[in-house]
Length: 92
Length: 261
Image 1: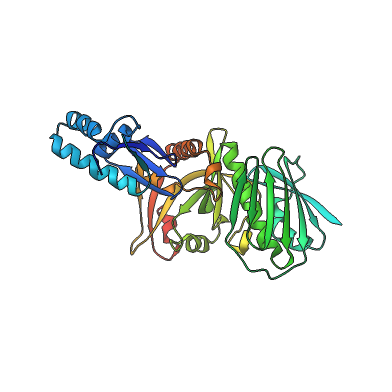
Image 2: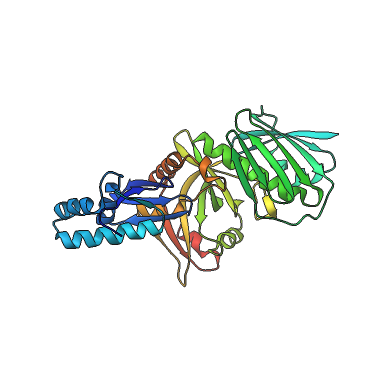
C-alpha cells in the first residue's frame, strides 16, 4: 500500500465510542471489533481527506512516537481494515 | 374460502386471511398470540397446491417500498408503505414458510420502529424478569432453555427486545419451527441482563465492559443490507448495552448456573 493512498470508512460500517473505546461494526460481514487507542485514532482519521502519511504524521505527534513507528502502525492497521473491507483506499 | 385472524407479536398487530384448512395448525403455533386489537398490517395468504418443492436458502430483495421473500416453498412480499402483504405457500411446508415470512416481517417492523432489536438468543423469565442468553450455534441456548425447569422460556431461538417506557423488555415470539417455549401469556418482561454463554468446567459470571457487549451482541436482522438503517441500528444496540448489564456466563450442562444469576 502506498502512503499516498487516501483511506475512507466503508458505507457498510458503523462505529461507536463506548467506555472510551471505539467499537467498529462491519455490517455486511456481521463482524465487530474493539480498537485500542491507536486504532481508534487512525480509524477516526480515515475521513477521505487525508492520506496515510498525513494520518501517520498526526499519530506521531499525538502519541509521541517516531514517524517511522507511526507510519508502520498506520500501514498495518489500514491494510487490515481494507482487507476486511471496512476501509476503502482511494488514489490521490 | 378463508379464515381471518389477528395476531399480536411484540406489540405488532397483524391481520391474516388464510385459505381454510389450516386452522388447527395455526392455532397450535399462534393461538397464544391471537388478538382482538386493531391491526396495522394485513396479509393475504394463499395455498399453492404444488408440494415437495426443494428448499432453497431464504432470499430477500428490496425494491424501493417492497420487500420480497422466498425460500423455494413460498413467495411473499410486503409493502412498507401501506403495510400489506401477500404470501403464496406450498401446501407441504405451509407452517414452515409462514413462520419464515412472519419472523422476517416482525423483524422488519421492529427495526423500522426504531425502538428495538430482534436477537438470535434464548430468553428465559425468572421472578418476572427476563434474562437473555446469546452465543453462536452450539453455545448452549437450547441447553439453558431445557435446564430452566419451572421458569418461562420465551424462546430458545429468537427474542424481541424493545424499549417500553424507558426500559428494555423481552417479548415472547411464537413457537416457530417447533422450538422450545413454555410461554403461557403473551406479555413482555423487564430485561434484567444479557449473558454470553461460555461452556466451562466451572460456574461463574463475569461482568463485561460495554465495548465488549456492543461488539458481541451486534447482529443484523436477516434482510437486504441496503434496507438496514445502519446508524439507527448501531444506535439502538448502543442504547441497549448502556441500559442493560452484560455478562459472560460460564456454565456446566446442568441448572447450577441459575445460582449465579
